[in-house]
Image 1 (cartoon, rainbow, N blue to C red):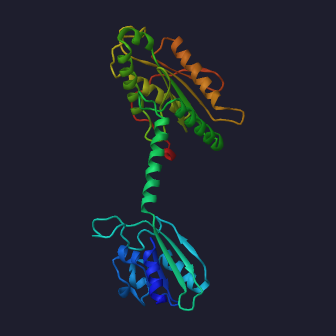
Image 2: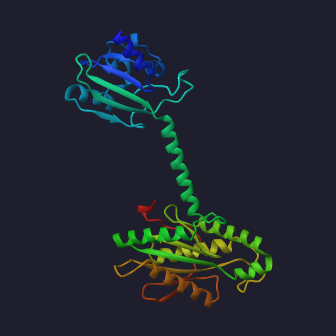
Image 3: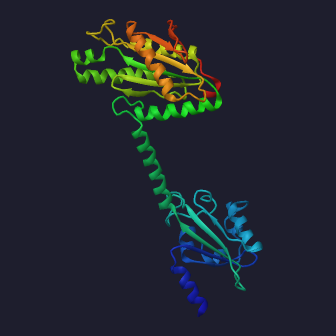
Length: 334
């Protein structure tokens, strides 16, 4: 009578219950286990779990049982690490059509004369799925927070984040870091002549062209504000930064977008300020921004549609045109 009542109690639990003797053989197997494993107590009684679940051999699950039987140590096996160990279905039915359960498994030693180990199994599938969904939503939210809604490139917050990380990395490694400040020439005149909708289209096309001119990996273009874009270039010295800047300038000019009111010509063009340094202890990201900004204003003063470099010594260097071609990428950034 007592044994029958104990089995009924186990069968009413909304979790899997397995009791093992001191040799690791199955003594009890509740209704939850029957539903989700499709194995009855008569089929598993007096068998070791590696006989019942051959895939469990040489896994943390059997190691945990061994630790409980030999040394009376408890264990908890989290979902994700042990999903394939126990072939339990999320719901009863055809195993080919349902997803496998994500189990949370507790292995507890017991001091009863006939029972040496208690195994409890909880279905964590819904929780794991919810956590994955929340992580995906969080990732998407972060991406949206750092993306410019119009052009699809990074926004000012993304630029500040990227430059800060790149600057710290360059400072620690004592490697060069460059920055390009890019401005669309006479953009106000473009808007005044063609309207803001055309201006938005122009910004999108220019951002797309600039993004296509980036190195293979690691470079992140951001909209700094209005018609201005910013591009940190990790591991780029002056020569490489100037080459990339000229490449981007030519790509924008190559779009062939008409600009009726431009003081430069008849097409949309950009001016680019370039700066580069190996950050020392006294330097800050604002130093790099200031130098690139000065170089940008110098490019505008000299007639626009050009690239100008200003380094840490504030020496102005006009960027000579380079042929439009592939940009060398340091091996560490491929």
